[in-house]
Image (cartoon, rainbow over all chains, first blue to last red; front, side):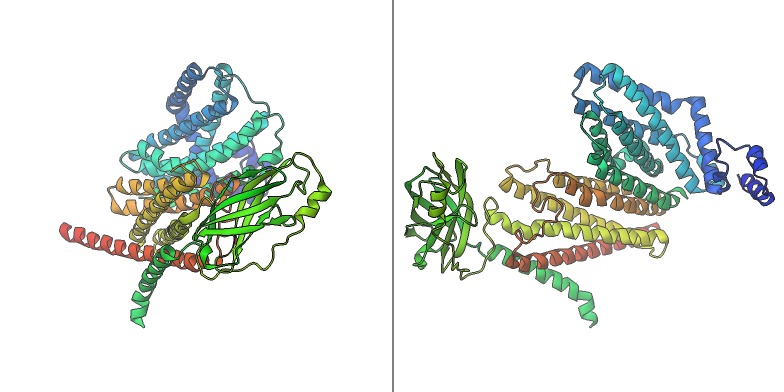
Length: 256
Length: 355
């Protein structure tokens, strides 16, 4: 990873930007400049590693997809075509539990030797950023899949999808940043899965309330953006707070 | 001087708590109107009202006056008042044939004033109706009397409010629990930060002690609130947003203790729980201070204001409320200090046993 940084220095000093973009093997859609920062380059590599590992085993995604499918089938058996607010409730519950599963599984995979290896090799901050991005990526995929399946089995009561995308985007960002931190805490204890769930649920409620309120705007034809302006601002603030705290505190829970 | 520094604040805490207990429980309520009947009258009738007062002393004064008040502009005075005993009077009022407003029916407040009890009021206690409208005559009837020369009363006490009644005293025991809890959690945040930065090796133990007492305060606040809610809102738990958020806050700190117990290595445990404590407190702030303001609540002071508004807390209540807040907070810190010292002794004993 240091190679990238030194390379960058050399290229910048030569002022040869075209070569810089062409030569770097880590250049993917123009993020090369950002990769000059060691932490971002490390987290980018880690994210690609996580993604490659997931692509190989498909352990997390297949597990969560199966879980989503089962819940949707069971709820459609119970509710049929539910009321719009119930529909929204089912969606957020599915997303919440998927987030827990993804967070716990992502840290469960790396125990013992592999974890020690990461600790020596990369900055803890890079681990946190990569984990959160990875969880965010999987969560977005799961939420799109959930929406598709729910449209098939539960109907589609959404009138203005823009609100749903806003709610999902900001909500998933907060969930990913939160579980990147809390699942790391849980993974250090004896009963990691249960503990991650228990310590994170009370902290999630505020996030879920705000995201749910924004998304609920999509159920009415007359709702405008002004109606949920406060919630959007607060959710952005909450995401920033959670992310900032995670960045500040992750070092202390990661090192041994 | 050293004595004052070590014991002064504990002594002050105990004295303030004792003061708030004695003053808060022994001072009587100010007079109020418990019941007025019958509650509804037609136009142009002689209304005979049976008024039951609470903490009133009607027999001690001879100048009791009663008004029926529609709003600040329109009111009528009672023709005669006869006192039955300290708490009961019978009032006769001639209800005019027309109301000064175009509505078919209105509700009036009843105001009683005398030199011993002072003036007191029961809003929306009498309903009046009219069959035909005549605003001109209505104005003439309702503008005849004025409310003037109100007395302030001769003895002090807490305000009497409908629904709340004697439970208004719970203000001094329920609300300080939340203040104490927030202060204790703030200090636990402070010591967590100190521990994590490495400037206080005992910071994690202090955090744990402060969290124990803070959690106790939180649970006591929930219990006192639930009992109060049973008397005023008619249910122990009515899914009020502040009740829910308070329950979540206690859950977060219960999770802290669960996390604390699931580690074997004490060094790692202290570091991780301190980090969780900082994380938990900061994410708790929107739950306790922002979300309740956005949603409707049964709690007083709703709609963006904290519950310290002028109407809810008069100057006599303030004289008990603020000392109670300070006293209970200081008592909480004393308890936390004792808990911390017990923890240190336990730590030393376990170290000694290992050797």
